[in-house]
Image 1: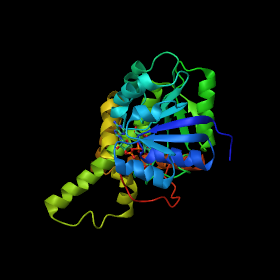
Image 2 (image 1 turned 180 degrees about the vertical axis):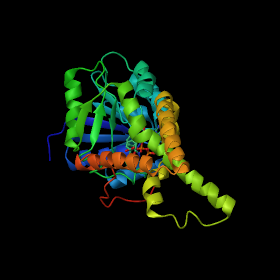
Image 3 (image 1 turned 30 degrees about the vertical axis):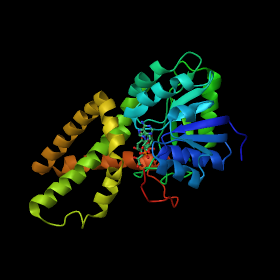
Length: 307
Ligand SMILES: NC(=O)c1ccc[n+]([C@@H]2O[C@H](COP(=O)([O-])OP(=O)(O)OC[C@H]3O[C@@H](n4cnc5c(N)ncnc54)[C@H](O)[C@@H]3O)[C@@H](O)[C@H]2O)c1
Ligand SMILES: O=C(O)C(=O)C[C@]1(C(=O)O)C=C[C@@H](O)C=C1
């Protein structure tokens, strides 16, 4: 148990990330009390039953009222509306952070609703699973994972406090600017999700035109590669709508490489294929050896999705 870093934390949107934060803060004693807001009664009841919130509220404004830290954990496209609702109710000196997968669009949507005297420190834990909802969270989700924070205009004290919270939950914290964040994540997270969704779509199309059971017999490669295509559609719709430029840039580069490989296959150019796979295998192996493999560990988490 650590000393509490915040007195009162408010979690807005009680899905995978907020519930994992709640469990982690409880496990390591990082908050004196945790308030939560979810739109549905079922989710609010689940938060109390699972014990990751002490109190739950039907409105975001009530949950945020009096909080020292407010965590916006809703899909990226909903951040602005939530900020507009809580803005007038925030305690002077409170910190507002978010966990959204895109940073520039969240800053544009949230910042205008926060008055002077509120510390705004956008954040993004690089940790997740393909599951969603309040029952999918677990305390160790953030262990040994990066958490990127965007300090912006916030005071060094407020930044240090938020950093301590993430470190208390086991993360390695790095500061980054929002534009760089969005480009890096377009390569390492956003475009891979798009490609995984597409691969499932291709298999399904083939199943329909050949009227065969392709997906039933899917091989391990397909399963490993497409795990992330089981992720929440609202979350990912919002990511692509809000990180448009960077994902289109990376998709363009991806397509160029794919055409190059397609040509090598057509031409029977084994040397080109072998060299490409040798180089990229070394890079992929290097990621694991550096201890940065981001494959979701299985800590016996609940597999049930629930909103
Ligand atoms: N899933 C991941 O792997 C992952 C990882 C890091 C960051 N994120 C980001 O974290 C945020 C939350 O993602 P999650 O995985 O916890 O999703 P989730 O679907 O598990 O939870 C989000 C919750 O927000 C609720 N919600 C939606 N609009 C709302 C509104 N206007 N007011 C109140 N609640 C609302 C939904 O009902 C849902 O319960 C997203 O911005 C996402 O981009 C996700
Ligand atoms: O492991 C997974 O299921 C994830 O996709 C998690 C993942 C990622 O791409 O690594 C997804 C979105 C995020 O914003 C952060 C983490």
